[in-house]
Length: 281
Image (tube, rainbow, N blue to C red; front, side, top):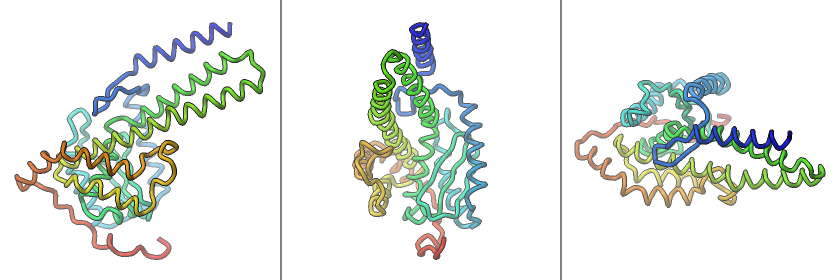
């Protein structure tokens, strides 16, 4: 009976994997088990929760700045990923962060506006976050978690005849292997893929792609990306600087074409962005 359950569980996982195979915007094969409508619902719920917990910045100049960049990027998103309206908010926190959620939501923190020295660098950040949504990385992460959970259940069933101590050791080894050998590399791949998509979007929108590596130079100076890369969810800043620099020649013609037309965004950075943050903020 246990063997039958094991076979049925593995078969169900295999069928789900085959049925859910798709392709990311960069052509990478991926596993997405959840429907887009469910992701959009989860995105809306997360957005409302974050807005209820984080203080919002009510600053007309900053809002116009972020909206200007968002609109420029949204205008060049490929048709299959296009959304007419993105709900955009600025969070009044010195945290260096930004995010995008399925369903069309973008959040930018004051700390990220300060770190990004100009519209081009902030466009690199926001393009990266839109890239995560386009590539359905959230869906893929959930799907990977389900797959790993299924593998762990199958492993536990396969070794059900062993002593509790042996089973615990085997499960711990499999869990660590799945995290370091599967989940973390995929997470870093997602970040690199979002960097690539974001660089393409910013160049097509008329933002200078040369500024994308400079953003990560700023991040490196801030101290981000410490510890071994192979134990991290994100590539090291030095890796991102190297990869983005290598990709610039591929997207530069799009930016130069926009520049030749004189059709470049003019998003005005808020004056306070260069000022030191107030104590306690």
